[in-house]
Length: 340
Image (tube, rainbow, N blue to C red; front, side):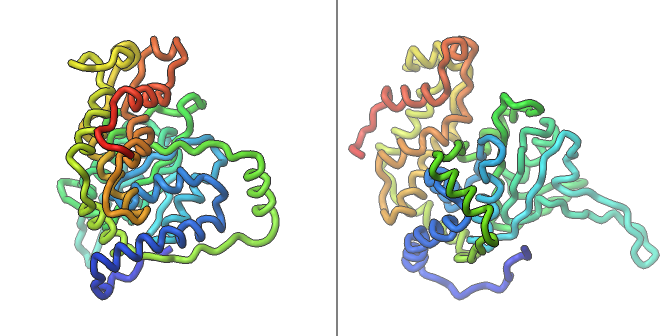
C-alpha cells in the first residue's frame, strides 16, 4: 500500500466530522464483516484506541486473525501500513533504521535509511518473541512519535499507531514485555477463540472463492480530526475522579487500598491508566453518537485499560486469582458516583 496523497483536503467542520464518524461506524463494521467474523468487542476497543490516538496491544493465540484485523483497519482508514515480524534475532536498527556510509558525487557522507517504523500504522507482530532490547526500540516512537539516530530527530508520519500482537506468555519462546513498554499501550485487547458456529462460517468462507476487498472509507487527516473531536467531548468531574479512583485502588499498600489488593497485587496501575480510561470513555461515547460520557463507558473499558497494568503476586497465582477477577472486584468495590 502506498502513502495517501499529501494534498490537503477541503476543511470540514467539527459538526460534519462528528456526523461522518458516527455514520461511518456502521460502514466500518460492514467492511470488516467481509473478512472478520464476530469479535465485536475486540473491534470496538481497537477503533476506540484509534480515534483516541492510543496504541493497542492485542493478545491471543496464533491463528485468530489478529494480523488480518489490523491490516483491514489500516485499509479502511487508508493509512500506510507496515508489518514487522518480531523474531529472536531482530535488532533495534531493523525497526527504526540505521545510518549508512554513501558515496554521492565523489563525497562520502552518512545517510539515515528509514526503517519500517516510518509508516502510519505499524503492526508489531508477535512482539513478545524478540528480546527486551529490541522491544524497547519502539518506546521512543510510541511516546514521542519520533526516532533519534546519531543525535538527529526524525519525526514519524501522522497519524501514527502501533498495534502489537503478542502470544500468551505461557507459550514457548516468548519474552514478557517490560512494564514501561506495556504502560505505553492504551489497551490490552484479548482476542479469544470464536464460538463453533462462527468458526464454521470462517472455515467455509475462507475455503471457497476469492478473498473480499476492503474499501477505504476515511483518510489520515480524517483520523487526526477525529482525535481532536474526542478530546472535546465533555466529561463530568465526578467521572474523572471515578476513573482515577479505579486506577488508584489497584495499588497495594496505600491508604484506602482494598484488602484483596494488598494480598494479591505486587504493582498497580499508574496515572496513565486514569488518563486512558477518560480518553477511551470519550471516544466510546463519540463512536456511539453521544456528546457526553457515562459511568458505563468507564466501566466497560476498565478491563482493557487495567489488565496489562496490574501485576499479581505469587499468592494470587497460587490461589488461582486472575487479573480479570481482580478487576471485577475493583469494579464492585469502587462505586460510581453517577448512574450508568
